[in-house]
Image (cartoon, rainbow, N blue to C red; front, side, top):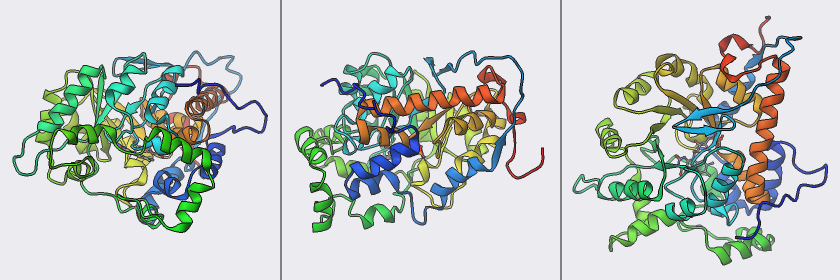
Length: 398
Ligand code: FNR
């Protein structure tokens, strides 16, 4: 791989925030790809709610404390992270930039954190493990064979993840059906994509993106395609459809737990009873998440679901959250409400779209700088000082 980490961000007018990256990413990508990354389900109520939830809280401050920030490190799933931010699993990142999930994992590593590789990745487990130094995490969509009820393919997948050296497992449980992402479909993003002259033109006017796509061919779910090769009648796309697990139960989660010796996190929890159940069945933690507003439109904002879940399991298990994190102050608010760390999804994909892995790394560095600045301005020196008392409703007198 060429040195994709050389920053091209020399001018002062380069992107300074996640929002800057969002703006630039939209310009870089064909409309179909942008719609796939950016949209949520139906009327985008939950997508917007994820963002808006943060502005309902104000940060409190203590001045003249004479304290400097002592560090932003956290331990998570046996890994020491230099900041409380991980890269969330996202499928088809190769559409945003040909370096895809591998480049993102390398960028996470350079920034001192980890990424979670999606089952729907455009790079294989072995490619990502082979191209990175540290242990990363794998996200699993568990599924059973509808006719036999057997876990053969899931078993194969977790064995491969283990053999490749992935340590933590994120089990995503919120895709009982495909989210109704109308924005995505209206822009032709489907399987196969619906191409119109306008959509082809939108790709053609981005010749560098187009050439990289054709050259590196990172536009399919490699992991699933490879699994499908073992089953003559199936193709990767069909496997993906079968992964939708309306018939999955907690027994299926227990099966996964029994077959993975490392840390396991259940991703897509919005209910404190569910969180409790996950922990009772051996989960090391949960990810409070509504899949970035891409699944159930009208579902509660992740930040709003967080306090009750943290109150219920936070003393025994790890609590992660994702959805709508765009600023260091958002990370700090989530930590105040009980998260041990957060995951980001779209922000690093914007980074990838603009500058490849260098952009992903820059997005993480932006968040790190913002976190440190926010803590300094609040008068907080250590992350473990954060708690609900540092927040107040945004529109209430203090
Ligand atoms: C996702 N997400 C996701 N989650 C998962 O468990 N497996 C997956 O394959 C994917 N794929 C995926 C693709 C794209 C393009 C996006 C934007 C998201 C959801 C992701 O892990 C995370 O929950 C959200 O992205 C968090 O919200 P923000 O940070 O994007 O607001």
